[in-house]
Image 1 (tube, rainbow, N blue to C red):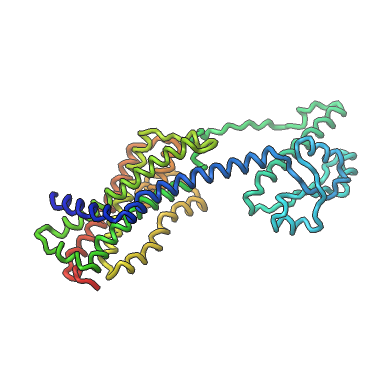
Image 2 (cartoon, one colour; image 1 turned 90 degrees about the vertical axis):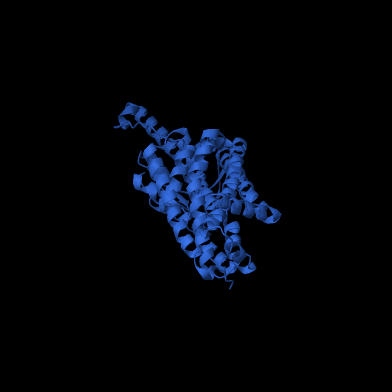
Length: 389
């Protein structure tokens, strides 16, 4: 055990002498994540407030056929404008968010107490047009109900006769769960930073030392090769956890300064401690996997070539859950990356994590780390490991 700590101390001292590498490894995450949270939160809130409260300038085709509808829209802060010659193209080219087309027979249909036709022209693939479209659709529904009620009263029919079923809604989502929907990107960032947070150190202490021919004297010492490798992994894990601690502290500060509902995200000390505990197995998996790769390649450049592939692994569960959402099941907490994604989402949504899920998660995470450690140890016992390419 003493040799493991000696090697870990030596690697950490070497790392902290390289101030640029140390600064990038420790402070890149704590700077980038708060910038994303604060920047995205401020932009989203500003845009939403602008689209909901400002006057909606709405191109209307056939406004002369429905002056009463146009007046009703104006009373709801929607100003009718002249429509473009080609509304489909104008919407597709993002000149307008939505265009309202009023049927030429609107007046005749309205006077005959028949449903009067209007058409909304919009592009559903544009997320920024969703609020204006929903806003216009809501006003049109309100107008339709208002006119329908007045028609019934004019004919001596109770307004309630037009509603055969009264639908009530009860949303059981907690405020914390709704706020968690705004942070769907957070698990990917945290998993990526914990998985590859010690990459620079891990690659340097194995593949880098082989190139500098400083690994052979270290392996020639009386210390067991498994102890030397474990010391390097321990140093990388300690560095990775220090970086994650700074990231978690920056998250706490970011949520406290963030606008809107993000300000109410639970950033108490127990939640932050649980978050670090969730990320600990991923730090171990990342460092042992990178040690395995660094011990099997011939140069630092070859080891770094694997980084582009490894960066895609954490995003796989995020994409899968977006395309095919699934219910939480116990087996998911044994699947790398998916398990971390589910655990972080539970913490963000302030949901209780059962002891059984904790047990499966920690057992699977540290079990995979042990398997990767054994594979890396076998490579460390090869004689050609100390020979530079």
